[in-house]
Length: 263
Ligand code: HH2
Image (cartoon, rainbow, N blue to C red; front, side, top):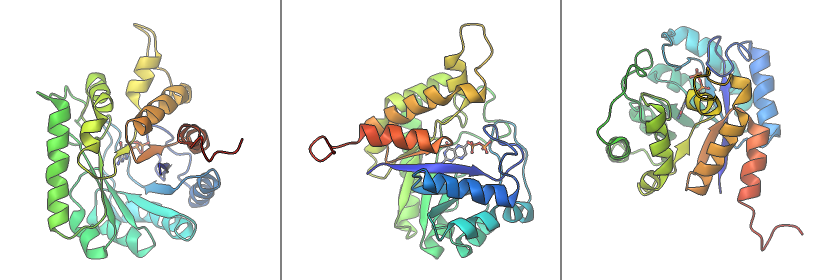
């Protein structure tokens, strides 16, 4: 079964939807709307990781996310998108059962709390990661990194481990496309693969003509859906998206079983 993870950014500055759900009531309403639209997981984050983003204090990150985590956890599986152990712990206390960890360091928290953990690949850190990222072989390096993280977390007692190539995290357009085209290599690690292309810059650049500026966020839905469908067709277990209703429709259609689907 393919899962759709809906993004809930409780931030003033996310690249994709900054400020829209910053108010607690708006965040909770958006989370419930995504549940009604068919989201299997809601990923609550309080710190933007867009290229160039600055850090947020632990107290501020907790203040941003905890009301939404607590309100949504009875209705849906909640993951917490954080790089901070104390924030992950507080979110778990409030009902989150999955740590979405772009730093790939928080498995000890997952082990202690007996929750799931998502290991994502990132080259460097958000402030500088898009300054000329270089790999000799991006697919092999990302796979090796994630395989090592899986081994560490498994040895540390984490039972549920997902892996994510980290589209856009220290990657050029070519790196992103190579990772998408060789998703089978990540799937071969034997763990559920999460892919998050939704609204990202490479889609904006691909959508623009030569010499034109990248297409704005509101014009990236088609590319977001195309890459989500591509990822599912090539073995992704979960896609992390902003446009939940549209993605649920696309993913449901492509995963229909012709034997059992209604006539
Ligand atoms: N991308 C973003 C944030 N969290 N988590 C995982 N596992 N994989 C990703 O590729 C990923 C992620 C960036 O997207 P968004 O949350 O929309 O933006 P921002 O970081 O600016 O809040």
